[in-house]
Length: 124
Image 1: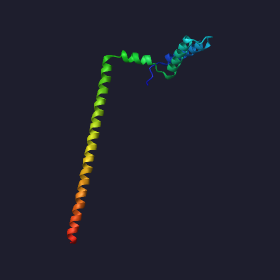
Image 2: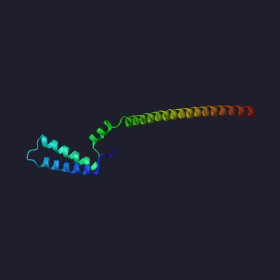
Image 3: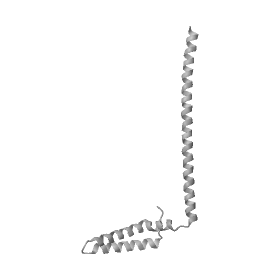
Image 4: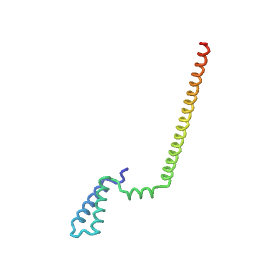
């Protein structure tokens, strides 16, 4: 999560959030309106502390230049293709390794069979 708020904006959100929280908790009646105000105040304090605003994030993504969006999509698709190639190479390597192990195992069985045959022939 990358920060998208400047330092003055962060401080102003924290101050506004604290004031809103104080106003919402200071009233006599605890109705729906004070609960909503407390929630908004808490969100503003959290945005100020974290330095990240979800609405600013959405607005930046919606209104960024098309070239930036196309570059981001091209990078994402090339990364996906590289991942697919890497997975395919991994599977091919695994298949080659399994094939080699199978061939080695069958050769060693044949060698043992031949050794037994030769030793029996030599002893007789």
